[in-house]
Image (cartoon, rainbow, N blue to C red):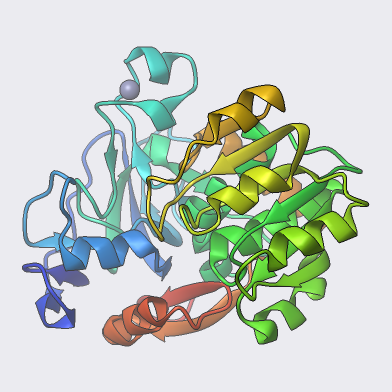
Length: 346
Ligand SMILES: [Zn+2]
């Protein structure tokens, strides 16, 4: 089988499409013939340096994937020909976090494409606990984007911020798939989503994805001024952001008293002013979040089914062209998820 592996760290020259044996399925695992994957920034990070992530080389990249079951244990919840989505984590199942259903906090857990071989291969043997059924209304590429971007957005918007119908959410940095998913989820909840971008062409597409208002980021106080205008000087109930330092002061000032901010990234820097006086006087709440639990993934899938939401795919590349896909992700020009087509047509 073919697998996209990195053999070192650097640019696309460390990435090779290797011919490997099909993985041997151990008891408790499900052997999956992969149909699709999805690119995430962590794939670029692993290629570039992987610093701070314990891993060995070569390693197959990929956290997101969807495919069809080839073989599972007798008595398994899955059988041959079931269409499935991979949950990106392999939790230990025994620690205090796993026992209370917060396996996303597991300290002994491993992630596909980071600590263990990932999903960008023609076959993957995954622990049964890391496999969920694919929503029928989604194709494989769409379904593959649920594991990281959509699950991350779901935990931020629903589990952490508890965004309610009728509330207003400010979502930074539209274009990336987490922000786009967060907007679609907010719209599905009946909340009013205000979205920002430095790219007016990206904003122009957002009303089709549930955004109530779009705000062009022209630097300075442009976002804050517009938020206050759109909310009658009140501010928003919830901020969803993954940009970090560049937007943090604006994000804090945009919140109404008692507002909630959730962050899942810091692409522009991770040490903004904490603005503690504002935090306690206005009684704000700041949440950190990353990925999510399997129960949340199942809730997300039920919500998508109910609301008829579909992940938006920017462009899909063949596994053999993964380098071009990574280039597109690195360029920041994408709108939504960059997909990978794996194996023959399914
Ligand atoms: Zn655990």
